[in-house]
Image (cartoon, rainbow, N blue to C red):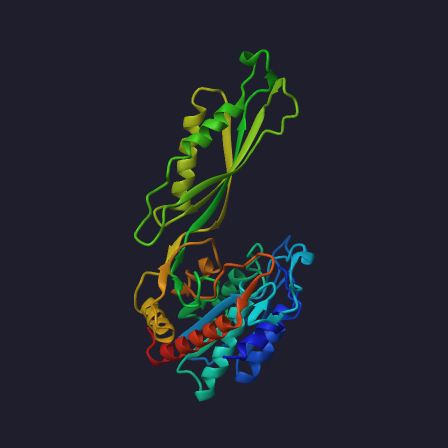
Length: 384
């Protein structure tokens, strides 16, 4: 559907770096209203955060409600002089659309709007089509999808199934369908001892060897993977002492580790595992290790069933090849939606997302719109 490309260009031309909107949601709203969508502009601002604009739009009032979720906010472009074409120009050259958001994921939003517009030409759906579009996916994710879902619950808005347009493809649109995501936790360890002179180590309690022991203990694999997930990973990202003197053993050492975990773990079980490892590292050294945790999301899985089968069969009919089911990658707003309904993710290739010269072939945008259009057709013919 060629309408998806000019709409993608219009969205890319909005400098909507989180939390700025710069008119992006107004473009989506202007495209939906003539189709009969009732649009709600939702502005949320938790204490101590920047305000974020969101959009919830719905066509129809009857169930089932098929929702497309996505975001129009993007990451910063970095040094714009390094881009071959300006990052917010949305230029098409030699069949390639370039700009910040071309892969992640203004094109997917445009593709779904174009697909919905084409679908409703033949009449209203036997149910409802909705879109949940946020401006906070690339940010702290407090004032976006999570807040919109709370508003929906308070206002009696129910979603029956959801498709998120995150870039999931390995090479071509439709080759990969994400049916789950790993969870993400960050642990900030602080080891405290007693500062002392290096010539008299017996008068000090050096936290560095103890913290190093903890790092070593946590190199053991967390698991071997599960039925639908690859093995969990634990990666240390910092080890800091901040000691400028070479004749002083420090009183404090710090380290940070990020864990991407599958459905073999919970936040509680991983926290207990970190505590056990810290206690083992400390032993009778006299060092104290404490840690703080940050939870970005928990692991989840949409079990293969009627909904995933509908998506897979539709993609196969359009592309000629079945999609690979996947649970790889980082987190997405699907982690919030999974508490409300079955959710899956299907979008373009993410090979250039967040990079300089982010870009996608125009044919891929059109292909994605065709897939979305076919999904709407099949969904309302035979809801899962």
